[in-house]
Length: 245
Image 1 (cartoon, rainbow, N blue to C red):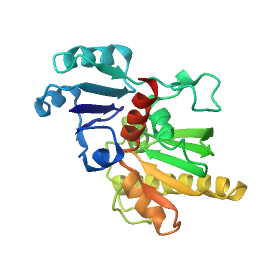
Image 2: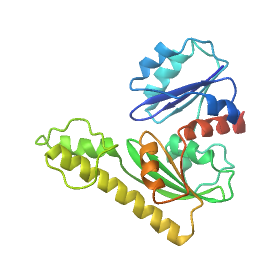
Image 3: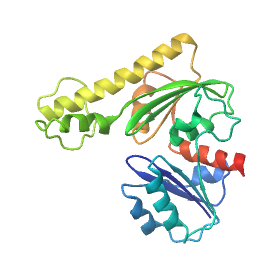
């Protein structure tokens, strides 16, 4: 059994799979937890391999790895910049978040023009053309935008849940913020898609991340070439291991 872990800024996600082939990954169920220590309530097997992608600090990542050693002696921590066969516009690929790197690695064998939209703590946009990373953008996501209001000390917001709200004008501070953030994110994603599509038609717009399914649903009504890939980072993690082993 193989344990795959994607530790992001807000959640730790993991799955268990018998092998790294696409059929087994498709069948595997992703579990999402808020605290890394919760992971050990759900895993109990002795694993032949643990694959880890972490955007957390080295200190936090090392603490997790030490705890995982009692479950597996073979733990691989993915690093941006590997394998070197994947070509990116970044001069220093190690500066890129490993989740972005792995998401693109999973798509790098395609000879089409693809846009990756990852909706999480931050919203990241990355363009690939014939398997090469052309460039990207990063803007605050739902959580960071919400936190910017709470820092003022004058606005006390409950956790925002824009997924499912209606467009329009709000009738309370909470409602105004929710509708405003929804409109802001929608307009941003729409504008970047139009800009890049006007330059050269995009073959596929791939949404991923915690809010990816919601936003793919919103844009699917406007664009036929959208898709949601929940396991994109895990797919890249599998490709990473198969390329470096």
